[in-house]
Structure formats: structure tokens, C-alpha cells
Length: 257
Image (cartoon, rainbow, N blue to C red; front, side):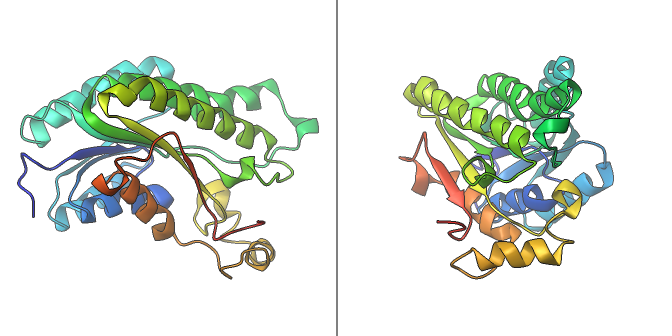
């Protein structure tokens, strides 16, 4: 076990459930301390923090609503206070995992401006400005991982807006890699495929026909499990990935290749 002074610290958005929960736990198993966020369910966030503490790490769960851009400065102030009070006077983060998001199928013909504002506000504007503010708090040699979506490659009807926002973040990630590379900060994206979680109302988890379709087009013959994604994110935050930046890693088991 590394000492508390040498342990690195990651901020994982949406770390209270689903893929984000496994990302937070995977980082903790690797020896990192974790600040995770939740949007509304504080009990879920604290339960994950307790699991991290049981693994020997330090953890905190903070509320974050990415759609509220005006609240981001206050959120960063809470992160700073949490680092000081919970993480033995730490002043900076090492990694940011941009995972939090929303999902819903919206056919283009019925897409509204309000839909656009909601999705772009969370998946692009919110992520962009949170990343900007967090990079000011990040140690040299750290990194950012953006969770995007394989749907921006294999086009799924109804998910054009969602995929377009994720595609914008993939471009942004490369610019982060370019501009922050001189500080040794790397930036990569992970694009998951079908995973049976509660995301998007459990669309894949609760739909046997969708599961069968995904499995039939996946050479590895199954749906992804949360740890397939969480483990990859942890790898990208490890020293073994120190020379990897500006890349998009599609984690789909080979879906639709």
C-alpha cells in the first residue's frame, strides 16, 4: 500500500453508479484516492465512497450538475476544500474522468432546441468547462479520460444528438492532449458499446431483443460488463499508459467491425 502522501487522486464524475462506479472502484484498487460525483442520489455516492475506504483508500462524494455551468466554480471550490480536509492537505488532483451524462433516443424529426440545449449542455459545454477548470487544479504528469460512445462510429437511429455531442468531445480531447502535453498531461477518450447498466433508463439492460442484436454483432460474443470499461479507464490513468495521448479507444468487443 502506498503512503497517503504519494497516493494519486482522481476525480470521477457520475461515479455513484453504473460504469462510473466501476471506474471509481477500479482506480481505488489500483491504489488511487477518489473524489466522485453524483447528481441527486447522495446515498449512492456515499456508498461507493465507503467501498473505496474499505479498499484502503480515501474517498469523498460531492454533488455535481453539469448542466448548471454557473455552479462549476463553486464545485471546484468544494473540491479544493475536500482535498484539504479529507486528503491530508492535498492541493491538486492527478486525474479527471469525465463520465457523467444523460441518454435518451430522440429521432431527428422530433428533436427540439430544448433537447439540444440539454444534451449539449451536459455532454459538451459542461464537460468542456469542468475540464478547463480542473486542469488548473491538476498536477503535471496527470491525465484526462473522456467517456464518449461507440455510437459516434456505428450510427444508431435516434442517437444522432447524443453521438454528435460525444464526437465533439473526442475532438476537444485531442486539443487537450495538444495544449497540455508540455505539462506531461495526457488526454484520451474511451468509447464504450453496449453495457447492461441503468443508463438511458436501462435500455440495454432491460431489453432482451437489443441485447441479442448487440451480441450477434460482437465477435467476442457477449455484452460488455462494467469492469471491461472501468479497468480500461484505470489503465489509462496508470504509468503504463504514460505515452498514450490524443487517442480514442473503442471498447466494444469488436461490435460491427
